Length: 231
Image: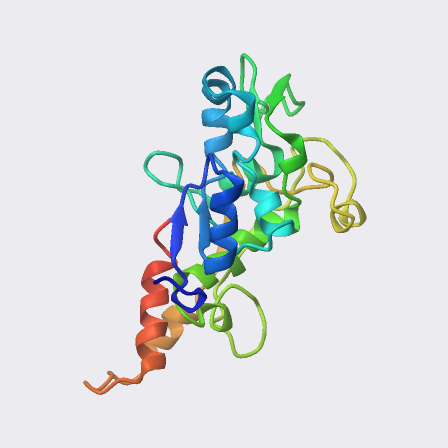
């Protein structure tokens, strides 16, 4: 049977039941969620599913904080856009624009939007967590000790992004620290990467070729490099 050490992954996790969540918690299953499904699905979900079926639907924050489940952020590309920034944005705002895009370059002010389950909005820190630490945990056994954080001894992969708040919401780090989703957030749908720093690339270009008798740690590290780029 499945045990927590297997790190089994359940993908999508859109419409759940409390009994299934109990099994997920008991078996240590990783929930690989796609936050961009919320704005895509919310209209038909509310039209076609009865209220009882929606109680545990699209509950990323509850899975993470109430049940303590390991949650990893993904995209399900090419069904949704592959950008993790768009996934983080949708995890934070959970909104479907009404009539026109929420923000544009020429019109930075939000237009009316419908929000599905605002109580399930993630903070910036939580959305970043599922796309970094959560993704590393799901990638391979001990992956969270190799990737996902900028700490000594970890693979030093990171990006420099353009920092701005096109939502015009103001606020700052204090609001973010207090968990106010949608306040003082610099993530936008068109966040640009200014520079990429890849320790994996530097290591690969300087290391000697591996022998046929690689260690388990080598195998796990290689697997995580491949798996972490899936979504």
